[in-house]
View 1 (cartoon, rainbow, N blue to C red):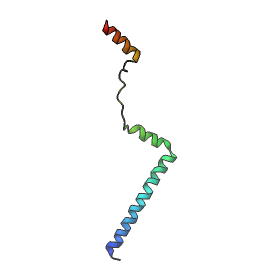
View 2: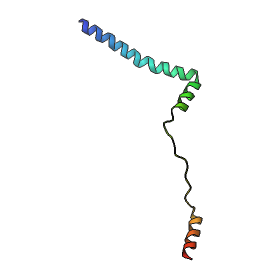
View 3: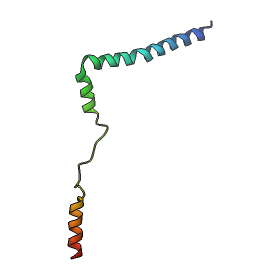
View 4: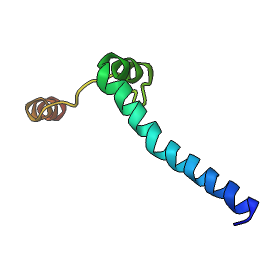
Amino acid sequence: MSAVGAKKGVLEVFKFGCYISIPILMMSAFAYDPQNLERIIRNRSYVVYPPEGPRPPTGEEMREMIKKNKQ
């Protein structure tokens, strides 16, 4: 095996180790201290809803409005 091949093999082993260890470490960090997860969720507001506007009139209110407009 050439020197380039050996370096490539070491790199692949390193990448595979990162691929396996990072999710396990992150999961253990959140599993042992749930406050970490809550802190991150509060810090990152991905969905921000606008304030609630006025509600549309109900069926009964619509009928009353139609009656007023007819008069």
